[in-house]
Image (tube, rainbow, N blue to C red; front, side):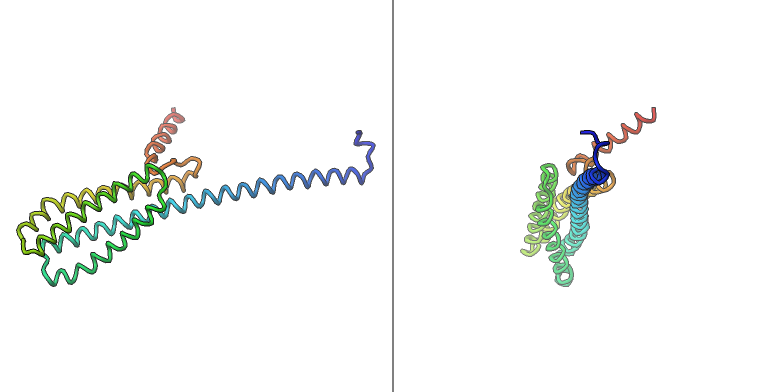
Length: 208
């Protein structure tokens, strides 16, 4: 068909139809792009929430570790117990809530393994803490203090190391995801270091 043989009205109609088709394609692409951006934003928000929970857990753990040690070294003195025990209990309950939320939010295999190590360290710390106060409560002051120095301090340090490491890695995953986008970010919380190394290597290569 020769377009030159068409009437002006037919030509305008055909052009308008093509324009509508192009606008439809653009609209569909825009909707798909918005959905992709929303999914990316949701992932950034989730990683930020995970990092904030881990950092809150870290702060609460350090606070409780100091409070438990102070109470243990006081030989569980009554006035000290009346002051510290409600605070220790409240902080522990807050960390219980943070742990439950993290167990729900962390989905990658590496992230779950990291969280499991923190939970294990927390359980070990609680078991030793209970043994210390059981000894002190039974009147075995020497045994309780020995447990506090020889076991509570070391397991507490392990707990601090684990929860601090988790908080740093979750924070790094959040920063990389927000800074470089989901497509460029590490696929798990534990790969941010490799990703950072790749970027540095790329920068060096470009500067040569």
